[in-house]
Length: 319
Image (cartoon, rainbow, N blue to C red; front, side, top):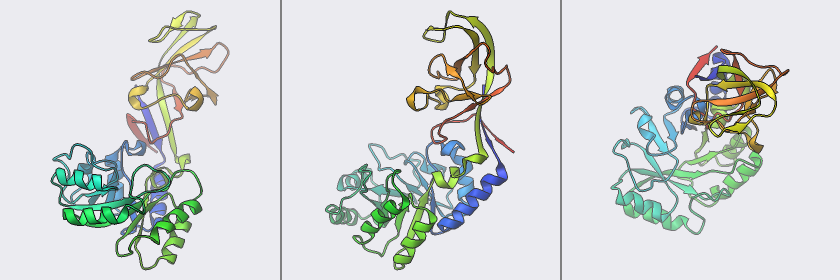
């Protein structure tokens, strides 16, 4: 059983280094290492991030302890009902409302914070009408404000995102850094050129680690192949139509593997999509290949088309 990420080592390292340089490198780039570590795992990406940044962003307060003491964890999600004892004291936490500030006070926090500004994502963040009250709450709580942050949506152009960021740059004071995301190097350079009095830091995850997918391949081992003629298969005794082979591959829901949009199978072999008998389950998935079609054999690998932002691989093969 193996879900394997195969990586062209030199191409990937070159991409990361080039992208980091384009966005600004040390002091102007905040690499994001959160969740599943974009398919690589957080420890591996943290090791890379420490080479060109002094601050590293994580998803939650429960991930901050992964960051080495030589670097500053920037936490991207507000704190809820628990502040873990493992949270490094040099962490920078995010607040987007007076409620978030009061929550940190209730947990006894006394460190630094970034104020998140509301974007068209409408996830969380201070509105223009709220900014003054959030700043006052931060000051009253005795927190040190480390900067501002705005997170545009995924859709739209980088020009759209830069415009949304620019609108906020005209609202908040310029004495603190502005952390921004979803802008390319050209838009970022234009923002910096137009706002030379302010430090603008690029927050980057997907484009930094996964920007060129040609050097990345996700695959799973074939564990078993058996011939059937009708009948049923799977945990739910799914009916089998026709004669063919059941192919068991070594990845499933425990790896974060699910059907693609439209309930399409993510599995391919010989440039053909393989039909799933049922949704991926725990550590395996059962596929069906009609007689006459190209069928993998035991120890073959099948391609797995999944966003690397949600899968947990068993191993990384560098080539």
